[in-house]
Image (cartoon, rainbow, N blue to C red):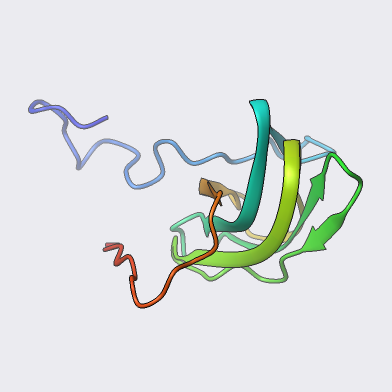
Length: 127
């Protein structure tokens, strides 16, 4: 979190808040659980903003046993969208299965409970 006294030259920004699995972590997984069942129509995964550290593939496993592969995530912290149209989801697990660099990870995971309605679009500015 930035405050008026944050020294951005000595902080770890933009990597603060990035989930970077430990090098010796054999699973490299994060579990997302909901209190109540949710319908999920799409997911957005955001790669680490580092140019050298990138997720080349991630696996998403839903509690019904279905599995989705992402392929390479868009680099530099951009969103990679995955349409999944799952109903009654209690949890899902994101596992990084292939990567480059020593600090590959995720800055954000978004789960949407509605299909995208055009022509609305969301513009996210990234530095």
